[in-house]
Image (cartoon, rainbow, N blue to C red; front, side, top):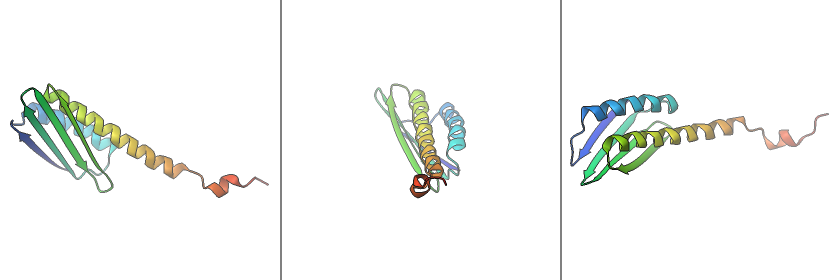
Length: 109
């Protein structure tokens, strides 16, 4: 997995890289086969924004969060991505479990 950090108007501290690594482990459990992750941290006066995009062969996910603290923004963004990934895998599982309409409509003899 290739992880790319971009800091706009700021340097990316090691503490935030460690937080991102922990959250990436959780995301990797939910979304299999992540190939590339791009983390963008932006600081504008009192606005601290974190944006993360994750790519896998089947799905691309992206989220953005803006708060007063970079750590909170980054943690919230990863929580959003994990929710998106769970929702996507849940939809895939539902589609696999559906019974064809013809089989459900035919009465048993």
